[in-house]
Length: 245
Image (spheres, rainbow, N blue to C red):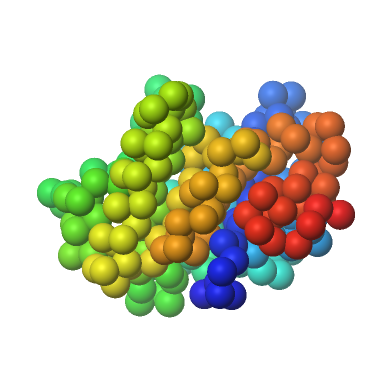
């Protein structure tokens, strides 16, 4: 749980691995980025182990499991292979996400309503003492279905908010706020992420029900100019945390 009034930050290191895989080499190292994020005050490290292994590899998950002293949030699809990964590496948290091979990045939330086998998948993760979050759009039907599936939390896909302009920004923020209230009333913890950056994150962080944010691309991009630890510190300052170092 977060301290009162403070939105926690988990730093996604996927795009560090993306740069490495451009050359199929050893640099940059997601572990080094993760340790820098922890030094700056991040509450955890997020990574998405995709089926096609386009960025993060299993060896990264193994190395991060050994190195990280905060929490690991493993984003993964609802697949037997990924259940085996969760069982092998025991992340503190799993976020179940949709996954399509042709997408550049995750384009929307998981379709929880009507999903077959999801409740059993969540239950199996709980049996391994893993906190389960479902990455969903902030829609009533998906929030209610997430609670019915036994999830501990929902992470709202904030892409529509991040891509909005003009009057649509306020409308999307209101949608997130209403969804957050409904989720909390249903007994779900509330997280958020996707497309959030230094300019737009404060409004989402200020929603009282939102406990933590998962942010990667903006931090990795900023790190090219100021370094990883400083980039994380600047993001924490945007969330109302300690000032950037």
